[in-house]
Image (cartoon, rainbow, N blue to C red; front, side, top):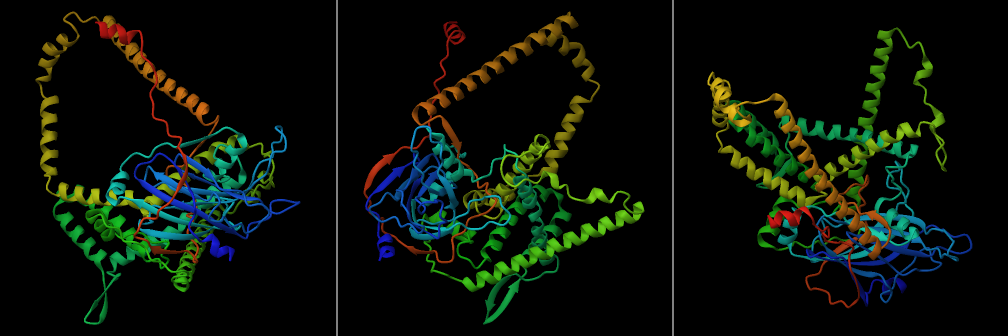
Length: 574
């Protein structure tokens, strides 16, 4: 009965954020199988949600490991969208009350999830269940319960598609207490802190980069498909199923025409980018899970040109058997590549030992166990030296994650724009006579700058530029004076920028709080959180009527309050 009551529409909503692209309607429905974080009672659960520049929290459900937020509770939020690729960041905590002002007890973290709404469609009501994870880096994550939400989006398709071209704003969440700051930090970043050395984090970054070895199977399969004309696109002809080798035919055409006319090279470079993105979109659609898929290129063109959405209709546990078989096959290929890489490394090591006549110091190949610590502060004497390495690996991992999200269409709007831009540029470059431009540009430069008439330039032009009686010392002084002036102008611009930043920081502290958390603008997480099989979606064409109880403004500030005086006044008078 309580579950049926939980699924009813919410009575009142809280609107948050400052965006203008659209609205996201989010309801936190329930959690299940939460761990007990208290000793004398059960977990007092509540959720904290961050979207762009807005932060909201639900009511606290006391003493319940499977809390339900009922329709009259504070559970429903309307977020105003500012960028179509922003994620909803959600964390679940055990609420702890500070008994005294000196009580520094923190809210216990239970788990978090990042809800990627980029590939969700308007006109659809999604009921989504996610596993909660306390770690965003661990190689073997274990869920700490699950959360169920209901989500619906309203926006103009053409406006959102073009909104992906806008630069991503730097969103910050400011809070007045350190206790709330740690909650917001965990929601945004989990336990990952690139500026704090931890051997576990260093190992996790290394393992994440090593896991890219699984791409070797995909690359090898793609190359063999192209080279050996293996069919991949299945069509039916008179009841017969035929697989067409479209990629092989395309590669053959591009190769044969390029060797005959190298003028096509710039055009083909742009086309290959489009080809790669189209191929990865096709590969992603092979996953039988409806939650791993993305809109195809044709669907995106259809929605963009006609401004009509194609709502999702997904049943519970849809394609569950096929999903398990697909994931088992992917895992099997990864283990094969991992074993092959290990065998190759052992063979290379054996050959090296043979050529060196055997290892004279076997202890060199043993692991140093002194750097391992079991929690608590690190006493590693090499922490200061290893921290830059950890930071470098962390930045590399972030770049790899962002590139993966773009290549695998997690950033579907931006990937669609890049693919179409490259396709358009490939056609434009096809009609540009590159060889003609290169030839005549080279001729112009050579005949202009390397001819004997440059002596006349030295006699008649150079003295006019630097004076007839050019004194080397005076020219050097003038050059030094000009450089000092340029440095002063650059320093003034830097100081003005610094003053803007300091004033904005002071204004944020005054309005929102002294502790600031930066909200990730890109998909920088190691793991992509995917809805569980019991999630489902159904079309909903009619807009839902809601009652806004409270309006919570976002924390985006747009200002430039640096005054000008002195020189600016004098210049205006002159």
